[in-house]
Amino acid sequence: MATLPAPLAAVLGLQLLGAAGEEIGWRGVVQPLLERRFTVMVSGVITGLLFGLGHFYVLPAAGALAYGVFVVSAVGMSVSLAVVTAGRALIPRIALATCFHWLVNSAMLLLFSDGDVSLLWTINLAIAAVATAGGALLLFMSGRRGESH
Image (cartoon, one colour):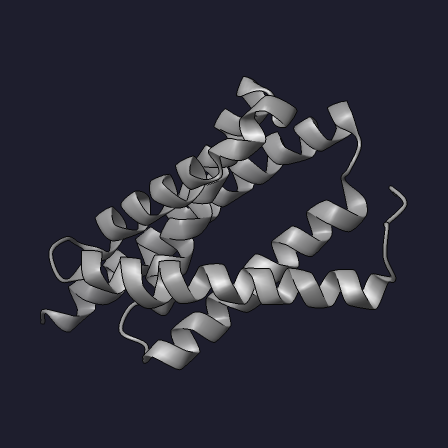
């Protein structure tokens, strides 16, 4: 584990604040606006792409492969969050997404902060995120089919 430059509680608290700030924008504004025009899945994909591409500033430090994998992870997680938060009120939508975002960020910070291991973990995270998104979509679609009868 990498040495943190500040006390753990402060780092985790700042991670929570950062995740909440981002999710207010992504899950509280962007995704609901997109859902007015597109399906939940398309809204999740677009939100994830915007989120991932919006972190372009990490490209020089991470490298193209790690950044590309991060964008794929962001899309997968965004689709999962879109499915889970669809139809929820604003505060629960943001709270759920913030907790998930914070857990992912904290795990990456605390457990995977060293070169090749971090890239391998990020690749595994991308695979898991895409698989989870697929599962969430299957559940969402099967629930929607049940509503039409």
